[in-house]
Image (tube, rainbow over all chains, first blue to last red; front, side, top):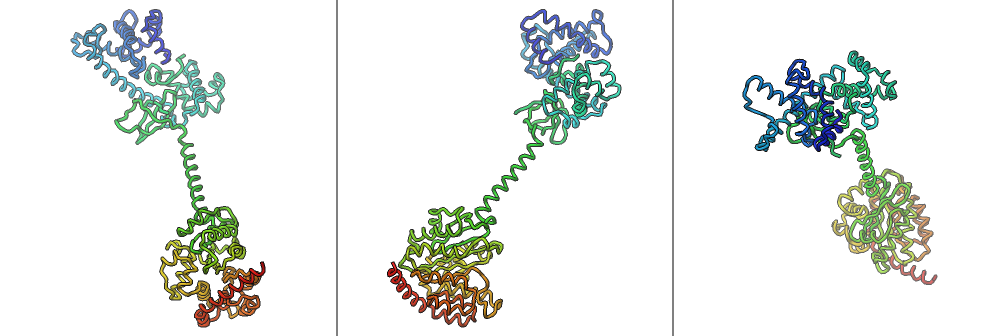
Length: 238
Length: 355
């Protein structure tokens, strides 16, 4: 999901593009599925498990509720909505009366002012917490590859074109299953192959090694780093 | 340019952010409020910081040098010598080692007035001196009817006296007075840098400070105020002393014993002491005298031959005799001066005759 593209799509859907909405929902089923599975801590199947249906409805709701000005990227936003709805659903399933509903139901717009305010606070707090968690996770992941944020400050290419070509190299890497596998196994960049398939000089790749690692990890695990990867203007995952 | 970034790490007073452009940057923590990991902050674009810092450093050092250079060129080291001219106006000229005037400044109000009317900067010293003297004549500080005294001092900063040709300076002082038919006592004396420094401290010109010093030794009393402002010719008249005597005497005092009977004056190329008589005939003589001033007592006769009767300049040659004899001469000074005046009128006549 490319952030700019996503927001553009959502704008169109909100304007009433039904076909696009269908496509959008369809394309994001994997995303929804993953969140629901993670929430339920078991493998879910479409058509069998209620959670998936709840999640899909929640995702659809997220499209309508989404506002770009909150600063929370849509995937992260959608996840929060889905998780909230799944929580509601679980409470109902467990015969618990829903005492506190963090997210006002659609159609209950009568007293929405209060609700939406509370929701927004909840949303922002959750998003902030998620971002912090994400960053810590990302830091841990980088450490596995022997990369620290300090390293990245030092070797972050300052020139925009260099940075783009390194990001391009990282995208190429994640596109190729075999290379990605090798990369994950050895925790080392397959520089030679990258050189061949990107045409970027070995020297440049070498210099930007840590940066490519960092960006590759971000792209290849985009769904785990919703906030970060949306924040960055990264190319679409292959 | 304002930039945004998500804080990924906080360390002390700075943090690492990741920008939407995919850059990792170390930026100072924003002040005010708690910053947490995951928070989006805005910061100032500081991409060029490492280079900028060096550049700023280099630029500021350059600036310091330039400013220092300017400062010094107008006040100190670049100038290798200083010349003060005292009439009533006191003026100081800073002279570079190539003999050009670096700057000129008035040391009292009259001096300021004069220096504001002439452009001395960048001129050769004699040229500048001539301009100043001319201006002094125009403004009436030097005029035919009075006892004119021009006291010039030269301070060499590092004993480097090559920069200034004293004779040409002397010529430059005399030349305009000659054309104006003025009578003047012209004194040029070198002084030690310390004297100049002290003079600067006390706020009078080096020449006047020297006078003050010497007069104290000689127990001729005048106040610093008098020395600072009064016309030197007037001063001489009022106090009945000769600046020339005064200076000569102390020169001798300072160098006593360093020379034998022969080398009365220390080998200074500097002291030109003369009661200038504009009759014209003794100009060549004067020049000769300059060349020979170091020579011994024989000069006395020679000077007489050159027609410089009763010139206070004599004292120069006598200067290295014992002080006693000098004192005698001093006591006879006023008489000598009056004689001198007679001489001068005669000289004027002679000159008129010539024309």
